[in-house]
Structures are given as C-alpha cells and as structure tokens.
Image (cartoon, rainbow, N blue to C red):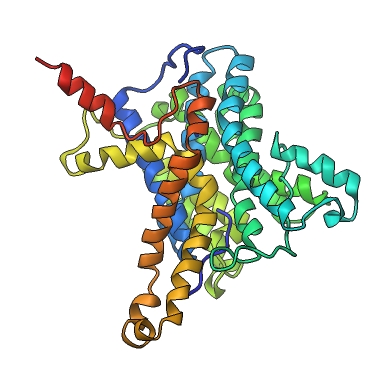
Length: 400
C-alpha cells in the first residue's frame, strides 16, 4: 500500500470580548467548509490522488476562513488581536514539539545533525515561534518497530509549513487589511503576481526565505479573500461578476498546471502558480455562495456533532494527522504476514479504506490526548471531546 507524502488550520476566551461578524448561520457554513477541508486533507495525505485538490482546495479554504476571522477580530486593537491569535496557535505546536523533538533526540538526533551545533540549538527556537520551518531529523532515526518507520519525523514535520505560513499571515494582517481597504483589487492580485515572479526564478533567495515567500504568494490571495468577504468588499460587486470571473481564473490555473506537467503525475502542491490561481477561483466561488442558514439543513443535522468537533480541534487534527496515517498504514501492512488473510482477503488488505478508518481512530486518540492544548490556548476549560453534545444535553434538561 502506498500513502501520499505531500505536506498538506485554527481555534473565544474570557479576556477578549465577543467578536462581531457574520450571522451564526454564516458561521455554520464556514464550519462545514472547514470540516470538509480537514477530511479532504487527511484523505489526500493517505491516498495522494492528484485530482483531490482540484475537487476541493482545502488549504485555500482554510486560509480564507482564517483570514475572514482575522478581519473580524481586527475591529479590536491590532496588537491585542495578534497576540491573542499567536497564543491560540502556538500551544498545540509546543505539544507536538515536546513529543516529536523528545522522540528524535532519544533516537540519536542532536547538535551534529546539521554539521553546525550552534545553528542546531538556534533552529530549535523555531519549535517555539515558527517564523521559519522548525528543524527535524531527515534521516538516521530507527523508528518504532511495527508502529513507525524510520522516516516518521518527516511525516511529523510535514504539516508545520502551514503553522509557519499562518503565523506570518497573522503578523501581517493589520497591514494587509489596511491595504485591502485602500486598494482592494491591487491587494488581492499582489500575491498572485508575486507567485508568478517567484516561478520565473528571477530572484535568488535563501531556501528558508524562498519557501516562506512561496507559501505566502500561493495562499495569500485566499487569506485576503476571506478578509475581503468579512469587510463586505465582495458583496459590493455585481452578482454576476464572481460567477463570470472565477471559472476563468480556475481555468488559468488548470492550464498552468497542465503546462507544467500535471498530466505526468504532479499535483497542485508541486505547482505553486497553478495552486494559487485554482484555489483563488474556487474560494471566490465558495465565498460568493455563502448561504446564511438559520439552522442546519435537514440533511446536515446528523453531522452537527462531527462538524463541531473538527472545528474545535482543527489544529490538533491537522498537526497529528500525518503521523496517524503513517502509524495506521504500518499497523495495517502487518496483516500481510498472516497467511490466511493474504490468501483470502488480499483485496481488503490492499484497500485504503480500512487504513483511513484506522487513521481517524488514531486521530480521535490524539484529540483526547493532546486536544486540551487548544482549550488552554483559548483560555477555556479543557474538554476531552468537544463535539457540543454536552451543552445541548444540558439545555434540554433545563427546558420545562
């Protein structure tokens, strides 16, 4: 069985007043989009199907929803908002780092890993504040026999680019919002133009700066779209503009992808300009739809608890999903050693579906073990399984 290896999210607390913004029905729609995005990320990291990001561009959606929330929060003082967002983002990363870095060190990773002991200790600070990619052991680990292979640290570090990109968007959001209000069109297009410039390789930049700029330019327009939606900029457009323009932008992204070798097995993550254009167009359409539900539509009511849970633990799910997928695949592959199963049920052993189910079971375990960090970060009482059932049950018990 093969699993995708591409690297493919965020959390109100007593110190902050309630944030003004869209009606609760609009928030339900956004919660649904975020839940779908998380599920798609896990599925993609498992199966690696290149067409999945075309069907639903999860990363663009998650950055757009985060940008929308950030613009809503910036109705308060910018320093307070940025500090609050950093506080809510970083503790889940620290928990991951405490487990991951400890594991890597115990398996022999240390100051000599990069050839410059001083730099190794300095780079460890990126596990505290990830303004750049936190370091990890790219090779030389023994793994955990029967549970994790020697490349487990690479899977652990895979999602960290998102945390680094999210942090930079948060830090830059006060300036981005000011620019968006003054020159909406130019500001929205600027990340796409930067993506094209970087793709032309006319700039020679250090690897850490180049990767940060690439991620910023790839998904910056989506973050800005979320802010523009919150600011009402998109609503001021004639209703026919978005449905007319968005498909053209998406077509441009698809053309770029095909031109760069998409048909030979590459995916959008390997083609930043194509990813930027396709995600921008798709997110533009999704934000244009934005139904305002006074209640969940009948067909979606059964998913209320699941959607609530995924939104309450979005960072935890995203950070731990790669390791859970690796562990699930390793455990499942051991069943090939059972002759009876290999002879009679090889079709089942070769299926990705049981691995996906097992991966989500392990993710559920991570939610219980590590999800409390999101509650502490938001200054809430820690909960093991925040799917909203307990508050609803309490409300029902108080009804006459």
